Structure formats: C-alpha cells, structure tokens
Amino acid sequence: MMGPSTDADTSASTAAVAHPPPPPSAPPAVSLPQVAHTLGVRYQHFLDKSVPQILNRWIATVAIAAIYFIRVYYLQGFYVITYALGIYMLNLLIGFLSPQVDPEILELTDGPTLPTRGSDEFRPFVRRLPEFKCWLSITRAFLIAFVMTFFSVFDVPVFWPILLFYWIMLFMLTMRRQITLMIKYKYVPFTFGKRRYDRKGASAADITDQPRD
Image (cartoon, rainbow, N blue to C red; front, side, top):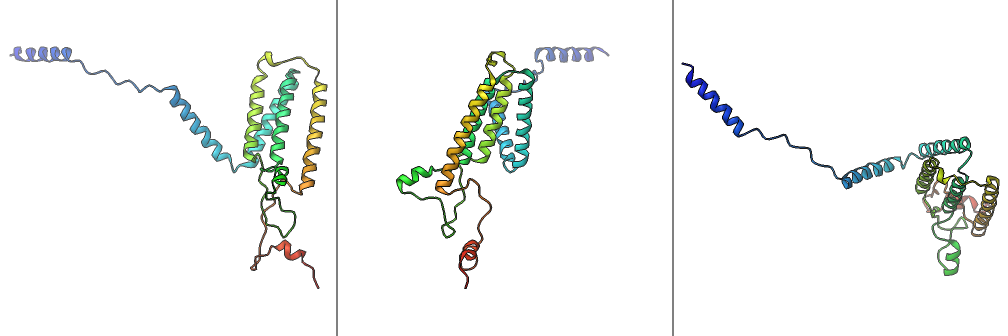
C-alpha cells in the first residue's frame, strides 16, 4: 500500500534536484556617474530652495567664518591661507559693488549711462556679481580654507602683521577707487524699492521736485 506513494516522493525529489529554483536576482549595480549625478541634482535643489532665504544664508556663512577664525586663532598658524582668503573676499566685494557694465567703457563708447536725475528713466542697479553668487563663493571659500587647516603643508611660517598691513592698505586703495567711481558716475550699488507712478505716468519723486506757485 505504501509503494506508490514512496515512488512519487522519490520522483518529486529527483525533479527538484534536477531543476533547482532560480537564485534571487542581484540588485542592479550603481555606477559612480549615477551617484555623482544624483548628488548634483540634490545639491542644486538645495541651492534653489536657499535663494529666497537671504538672512538665513548669511547667518550660516557668518557662523562658518567664525568657526574658521577660531580654529586659526587656536592653531596660531595658516596665516597665508587667511591672507589669500582676504584677497579673494576683496575681489568678490569689488564685483558686488560694481555695475554689470563698466561706466568708464560706456563713456568711451557713448552707450547708455546710469540715471543721474529724477526725470531719467529708472533702471535698478545690476551688479557684476549677484548677491547669491557672492554668498556662494564666500561660503565655499571658507569651507575650503577650513579643510586646508587640517594639512600642515599649508602652514607656511610668516610674520602675520606684515600680511595684515598689506591687506589693509590694499583694502583702503581699492575702496578709495570704488568710491571715486561712485561719485564720478553718480550711482549707488543698492536699489531701494521701486518708483511709484501716478495716473499721468510721472513718478512721485518728479512731482515733488516740481516748483510750486
């Protein structure tokens, strides 16, 4: 009575051994370019979301700068890196305070100039270096400089008061030239709101400047 059942079980076992179940599929391999692309997309998404957060962005940058200066003060070194960082910041400041088109070049080519009177067409100040790019460059510079302080090869011995004196002199000369250009071409590197116009199309400032009887 048990013979047929035993033969059936033996046949099933033989079939299972002859045809083993397929192994589980391995997860797809992730290449390095795909990882780099994913990180780049997330990084750009983070930057896009931080554009309107002007105050929070600059607070974070000030905190990073404070951490860097505390580390330099604690280590008593890396003054050359700090000097190069200061020169780079000065270059960014010049771009931030300068118009997109050099007024001296416009003067030579007889191109459009900046408005100097209330009756001139209102044009907002367009910077050579926008605020967001300026912030991003400063933040990256401090982060790179902070990482460099972990490598002693960048700690070049130097008399730091001389570097500080050079930087102050360079800052004063650069700002003097920048202020001279502002006075000469009568522009301010800041735009405070927009002008309001009445129904006739004249600006409120022009109406106020008109002589009264």
